[in-house]
Length: 115
Image (cartoon, rainbow, N blue to C red):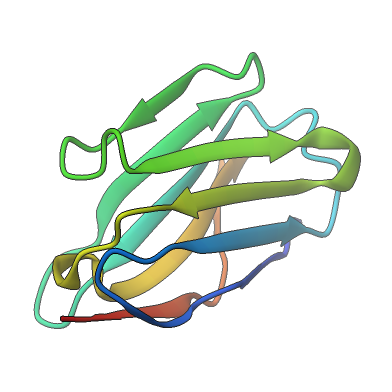
């Protein structure tokens, strides 16, 4: 079992920054890929960024150059640094891990970007 708890969401003006954190209940060293997803009202959940345990990263085109995903295996935490935020980044952001053939999700954290 893996429990994931996100934090760091909130209300920010366009152009601002937020840093999301996702703390895992177990060591993330053996979790190959950790992801951040987001879901805006009326839209499907979409992949925002991924990071492997060799620190290879992948980003959605819409956030490239603005968001940075990182992981700290010693703290069992994955981060999403979000800069130059836009109103279209408004969504609930979810942390995701796939471990032992199961998918685990956090409860989500709301990010609202005002124009």
